[in-house]
Image (cartoon, rainbow, N blue to C red; front, side):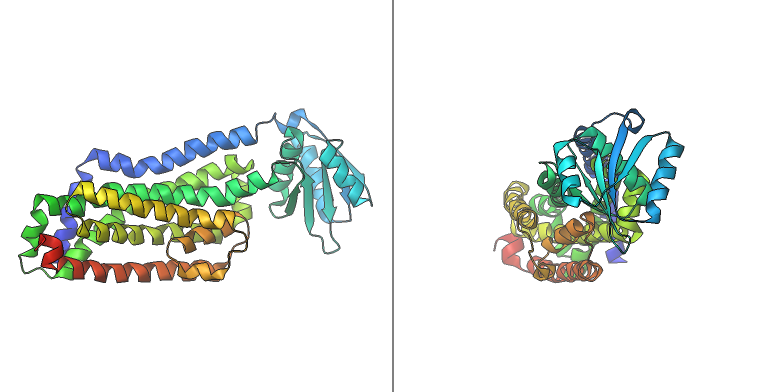
Length: 359
């Protein structure tokens, strides 16, 4: 009952402060707006109906008939020209002489060669993605590295930064603020067990911060079509239900971990100002961790043991269509284990008179 009362107090403080509610919802809104605008800039081109697609095709597949039928139903101008010279076809795409090059393997797998800087080529690629959902693609324009790193690298980093900001806005005031005002000391002199006090902070703060995490997740999901230049069906077809589920679980596992980490810093600090300074350093370290995997290719499966970094790496893999289910699941479990260890540390810290009272 004492734990329930502590949890209720935290929820009451949050839901009676409209500013905190806005702070939780703002990340998802910002992600959606920013990346929808960026996606519109990257994939800015006229409607597919305004183009005359001239495409080379190598290999045989039933998918060719599917694409032709879909183009006819959509009223698109599409000319498919068979070719056996893949090198020449790729060069023609690169030079802008043709719209794209469809290469079917003997097993029926499709690889699309296109130019993302060309509106017509990008429009055809988006059309095929809507029709086929699953394929390999090779961007022959000069912005290939930018597109890949932007979609699968930078976006998870931004999500983690937004989550950290949301957690910091509510956790600092709850832990360091009450410590500075002396209200936490009043609770400590009661018969409430230290672990109950800790859980009474971490559980509600994590639940509240999860609102921000859910907001970030929804913002990511809604902005993906514009960011990738495809329809919603194409995004879900490429990433799939399992991919989006793992994305959500990874984001959700990071929330209590960051909340607990900020609680540790806040318990050590003597004021909100001091806690804010320490937390800023922690945020920089997390930002560095989140950026490591963006610039280091083949970083390795060892990252599964590193908190926060493991979630970022797994999210990047999912967005890059290179999902590792076992690594994602292990990362989620380990993040919750790290959270439990931090909860034990916080309980020890608030039991120390030197830390809590400076004596």
